[in-house]
Image (cartoon, rainbow, N blue to C red; front, side, top):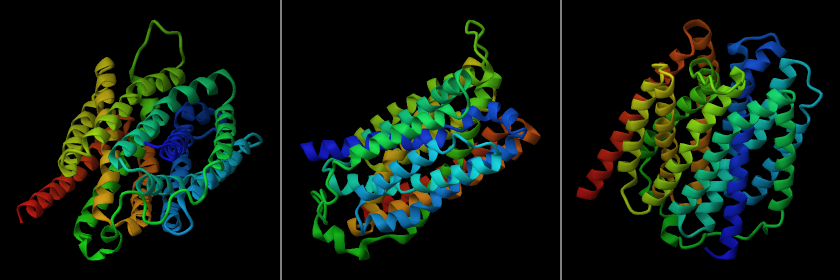
Length: 395
């Protein structure tokens, strides 16, 4: 990579970690917030859903704007907007006000994924590797936030994680302004004109199957990530550590989710050289197996299952991004990424409230059975993509 590519990747990776920190800061605090706001899992699940709907819905216009006003500007908007609003949680005293601010933070965060993936696709030659590295950064953000948010919230007050992460976002926002707005020329690096203009090659059936599969995985992501810390705290016993359930749940969730970074790395390295549909199908199938094993609540076995689930689930993300660059010409990729993240984060966010209802009435393990069914649906659709890719090759 040249200097400009490294700087672009530096911005996207740091911003990617942070966007998942913003997304994941609330779930580890749920055991505290139940008492603070005198509420239950269902209503806190609604707050997570509000954030996630905004996170997903904003991806549609963000994808369109990324193709027209430039992805770097949208990343800067996200960093300053989400950072400032996170600091504004300081005076919050009611659940409804908290929910409104979280929704606005989600709206600013929604600009990131379509913009960053467009920036990588247009500005970096080794796309698969860059998507993998960028994915690792996101996975690390997902992994560290349960422990970080839980420890800070337990040691200080529940508002402290929001404020600290908000200040970090503002700082990265100033860094983003050092990258020229037009550092990536229209047409990108290493992209032919044919790929930019040949709309006739788009298979809309493949796109529908792909987006439906991604939406099913989006449901599993939000449902599992919302209640994983509480589930771990309830079912994993660490007698040699004197920690409360909040800190234990957040710490164990972080340990399990760190393997997601390895999944991103290996998938990013492999997707440039192997058939992406085959990798995608394999990752989803193995993810399905370990989600159902997680529902068994077998202490250390639960942790091992969560580690392997995390590895295979997060390995799907660079593969999905790569598939979109194959299924769409460059001029449509920003819009494609917008639709993709609208479905995964927007439609997928429905799982937070639904899983909250399941947890209240049937126990937290019911969340993992329900999400396992969504994995099965995604596996079937990934198999269809694999069959169609073989048909095209044989034809």
